[in-house]
Amino acid sequence: MPLDEKGSLAAIVTLDGPAGVGKTTLARNVAEALGIFYMDTGAMFRTLALRLGPGAEQRSAADLLEAGRQWVFSLEGQGSRTRLRCNGDPVGEEIRTEEVGMLASRIAAVPVIREILLEAQRSLATAGPLVAEGRDMGTVVFPQARHKFFLDAAPEVRAQRRLLELRQRGQEADINELAEQIRQRDAQDRNRAIAPLRPADDAVIVDTSYLDIAAVQERILQHIRDKGGLSRS
Ligand code: DC
Image 1 (tube, helix red, strand yellow):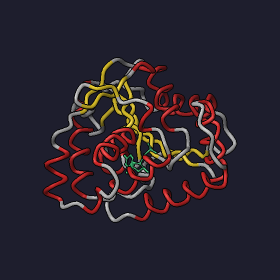
Image 2 (cartoon, rainbow, N blue to C red; image 1 turned 180 degrees about the vertical axis):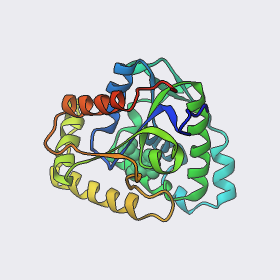
Image 3 (cartoon, protein in one colour; image 1 turned 30 degrees about the horizontal axis):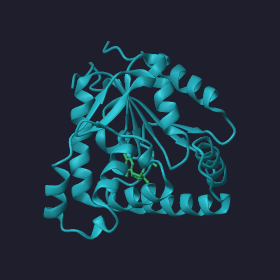
Image 4 (cartoon, protein in one colour; image 1 turned 90 degrees about the horizontal axis):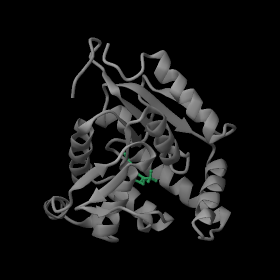
């Protein structure tokens, strides 16, 4: 991937943060505003979690490596129309449940799973400028990205947002249960030994607790403009 004269990757925007902070919506909106594609890496972990099934984190590294190699991710379209595919099949709503999120968080602590997806994520990024969202985009996968953001919000606020999101999809949930799931997932994602959730030293931290999506989006776009946009010079 081409570096600019300061040794950074100008055309990569990283958005990291905990569950339910609004990363996917923001990644989609920012990608749309910039006319580039976005990569939802949580969706990649969720897809593997769903295909491997419960208990996958206990399987041997060799077994997981063999299974993981069968699945190839691709991206098509751009902006809000970016679509993730796995072996050519569109990744859809089937991955968007809290149960799959929890399975994804478990397999995300397994080194061989992270290696498989790290390679896939870097390879997808060679196709052009993109917004990469996840937990370790700014720290591990694209440490040289020029534009790094870390989004955060109080767990209760995130649980409330998840509730609304699920309702929009016609699913009901209990707010206290959602808050508990979010706390558990936070603990798992922040405390794992490999690529834990944390802001990169050079990330801009945005607390979204009291901001709506449009305000956060404008803040991000302003920072990107202030740092020279996506051009290499
Ligand atoms: O962002 P999400 O809720 O779709 O992510 C699901 C899980 O996948 C999350 O709890 C941890 C894991 N994940 C990760 O470890 N690293 C990433 N870059 C993205 C997701």
